[in-house]
Image 1: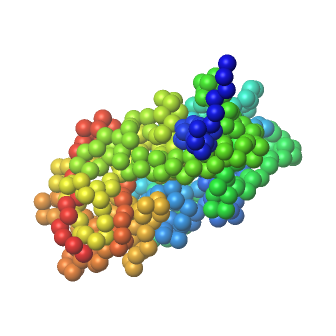
Image 2: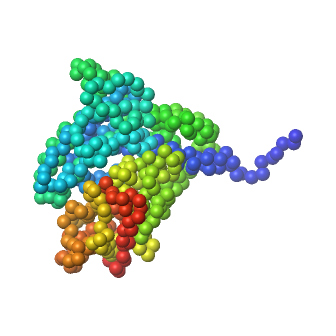
Image 3: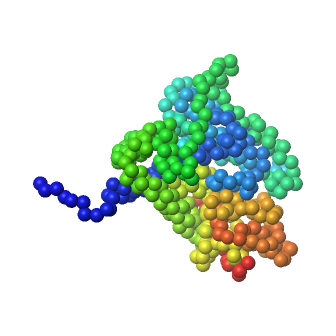
Length: 458
């Protein structure tokens, strides 16, 4: 058999690593994203693994970690390790006040390392009642103490993240009432290792702190190094993804593998794949992959919150990049909008109106809001520190019960529009409409929100 001479400088090995690497990046994106997401949130809040940290004020533009945070609830958050033993989450029964119907909506969202929900407690899931709930890892077997309830499912990964939300009233949100009541509720959230629950004098097995992730700003292979280490800590499900993992292993991607021992051609291909893979994730979100568009707004697919269950790897990557963690749609529907009703991108160079007819206001059983973000998924600074409008914002309705929001960079010249003004940046932006405990028209994607009308230049 005669040998074949190389006919060009085209590097097949680099191109192979690049083309396969793009798919590997999309599949493995949670393992690239979560190390930094966990670490940054814990460092910012001076947190400790397996303990809650409580955000005592609403998030604003000083929060620059992405993830499109809400501006409606106070968060309590915890990165937890379940590889040694279960943790017991103790929650208070929320105070009731007949003068404040639906006052203290709350939920605790349990998310595995891939970004999939595995359980909830809260207003919908447990009726707002207090209790003690066991958070179980993937391999634990045993009996729980009396009075401790196991959650609907174990975490598929040893590491998981807890996000607790407590809704603010209109007065609390607008600074007209103290936040002491909400802070008191937060202070009652407690995590206790099972060994210590059974014996208060026991010393739980030590838990490693979160490791410092590699930085893509200084290392073009950082994402791959983070993926390989995070996958070792939180292995992908072999039974479902074995074929993919075997394929990705050929370019050095997988649990515990070392990117640095790959060939220079492979490393060059992976560097390019990480850059272009991220562009695909961002652009897929903007253009509505897996979403239903109505009047410019994007309905998320029904399986948002648990995309691994349907093996939609691109949506899983989008969900992490745009929201860090995303609720199941039965808990909350997030509708995004990047364009006006004529299909043009949203920009502070224009002024917009969003008009809800009285009979077409969002049908929810908890609350709704519209929040504005830049394209890095952060809240945008403005002179009046207003980042969202919704059912507790004190907006002024029309005489017929309709509601018009004014989204623009400059303050409206008409004073009566001020309460309904959502400040926009000078440049591009997008918005999320949050619909918590959505009614059937929203859950079924039958409801049609109004599109944004461009009413002229700023």
